[in-house]
Length: 210
Image 1 (cartoon, rainbow, N blue to C red):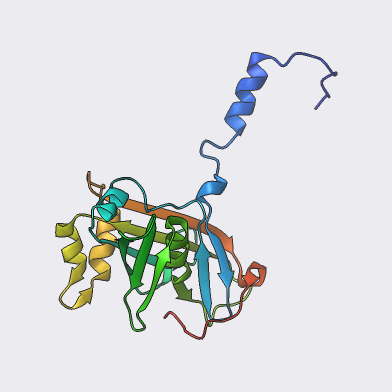
Image 2 (cartoon, one colour):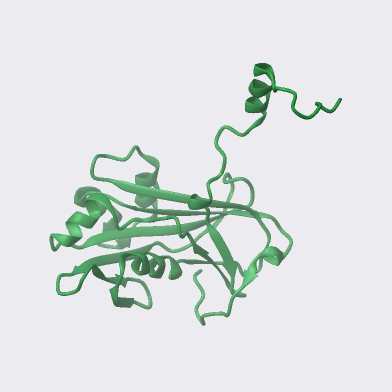
């Protein structure tokens, strides 16, 4: 194609063609999902994901506790065929009324963990640091895709997820798939295609998330 001489005005048609060639929904860095590998598990980070905000933050400051559920899903293709899912993680967050914008959080599971006196940003980061999915047995050069789902909802729907027999994976998936209500908050972050050989490696933490 002939080069346009310097200083030549760009026509309206050229601007329109350039606009059509651009992606309609460009990926934003704030929504990116960082992924690392510790030799057993894939772990994630999402600096742009803020869930201690809005109505939920108001509830916390009023003395209520807020329960968040999260899960990682590993796909063999572009978010269609599921390879495996991590166990559901349940985070119970409360506000430290004696501190200055400090929070406490407990994660349930086979090995319960907790932290306190955390800022909002530190609480969000701590929750995501505990989320992992086992990647043992995967071919190092095999491409895969990863999605983080996180959400909380009203007490009625939350009760269906947190049943007497434990956390219901099926009900959580159905919850994420429906249209959020006025009191619901849901987030998803995706990454891929990825390969184990291309990921940053971090020290193992001595626990596998099957």
